[in-house]
Image 1 (cartoon, rainbow, N blue to C red):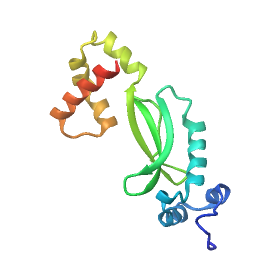
Image 2: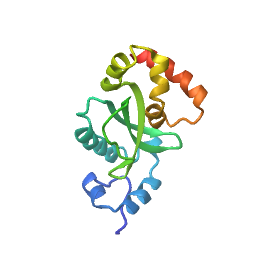
Image 3: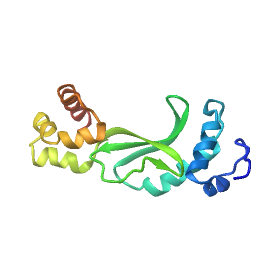
Image 4: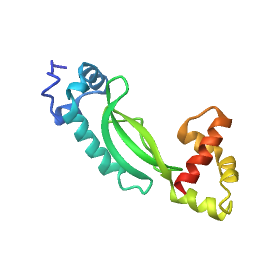
Length: 151
């Protein structure tokens, strides 16, 4: 690859890079100084076109994650049924959760009669997948509160 200035790389040029080259360029960016933002913003817009139409996606934005890496941030409802990639066009994707998908809300009412504790206990695998928690007792307590807030 020819030498590319990190501050004047176009999105069109970015798309031509290999994953390895994109990683190298990203490592040279200082996101806190805004380096790479135009590329991340363009990637976020494409991501939004591709995934933003799902009912389970409530927000798509971009920003700087802990440690100074650009990310595309996706807010999903727990129980989402859309496949979200770990990276998109070379930019990391971070999943956040806000709310509960409509099919899980219906299940809470129809199957569990609104009994949140029974619902959480029975659907613990789904919640654990979304929230990636391993401390089951604390996780269950937190989930009961989460479901009560978002039902």
